[in-house]
Length: 251
Length: 285
Image (cartoon, rainbow over all chains, first blue to last red; front, side, top):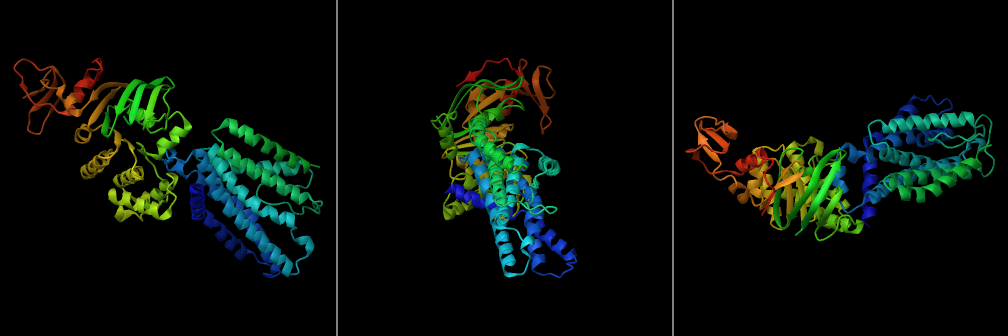
């Protein structure tokens, strides 16, 4: 019961974090600046939601989640909180779920909105995301939050999250350019059609499983940061499965 | 005894912070007195279950903090104010204490909020409970730290330098709060301030270089300086410490010359003597 209360409290901390408020601001500014040559039709809003949730959202969420997760360390409150009966493991689980669940909810709402817009309007089928790709949205944005928590736990110093951002981004770019399989490896968006390449049937769901694995890896690595044995025993198989799922997407 | 420490040793790299320390503390206020680096904070962190000793035995509230289950049970009945207590940025006073209350597993919302309001009132924070902690003065923040430690009426309260950085009025208020808390539970606190120890503590342990030099009551410590404090018109060469008091007379502490005008000692005099004679035998009473 207390874990549920704690999850709710962590969610509240994330949602009230000023950095997260940048998401609507950035979306509002970019949509206002966009000339929308075809007018603000259904297709425009479809893409706007996609960009907000799958591009701006994850980048900002990464930093906001990191600031929330590292709040105790930055405020030098860790020792005071450490001696409560709520263990570090339980606190980090609550932190991870409190951050990931609402973000996944936002992603799910966005995916549902895109599905509705796509279904009710005459957006060409080739420009619409299929069900497998839409399901990736909650995982991408929740994964960005979990990555922020992970960075707070493993790189507990100022600039840790920036290093995470740069390494993940550069790593994604290198992977996308080096691996000629059409899979978008970048951490902040989902796979769509690239330069005429369309994912074969079933591939988006494989990517869903892969993203789920990444989210699980991030959560496990964050929670069991100081418990090497559990980290290996629980995280090892999950990481192996995730790598296999990633491997299936290679050409 | 609520706190029983036997032969506790703790090192950080090559530095020995605690060297075979024994300590017993029961209901009331026990004070740890000593200079910086004497090992007070290390011992308090061990008693607060933050650290484990490298060697030695610790029993808290009848349980062994080395065992995870026991440690959790101890933490359910423990309140702790660290020396360098920080707070989540952006939290209001109420939100922060409420957050700690959740971590202390107070799940019922109404009961938890009642308890948060109780400790806020107890520590005189009611007028600022909706203010952000970062907007408070150092003294007020210290009160927030004490308030979270008092949550749930702990059986063991560990306070590291609770009065540091407080103005005289705040210190008196803090003394009152700690004294009240000590009526119903075991309080272990550290301080540089002999006045705080004299005013608050039923027992005192004096630390020097990681070892306990004295344990006993403040009166017993003070009595050790009887006949070793004298007033003089000038600073005495025989004194370990001497200073000019407000009335223009020098207060000398050490071995008085024959015919010296002896004056009643204070706890501070006894502490200075103890620190000035580090080879003195360890005394337990």
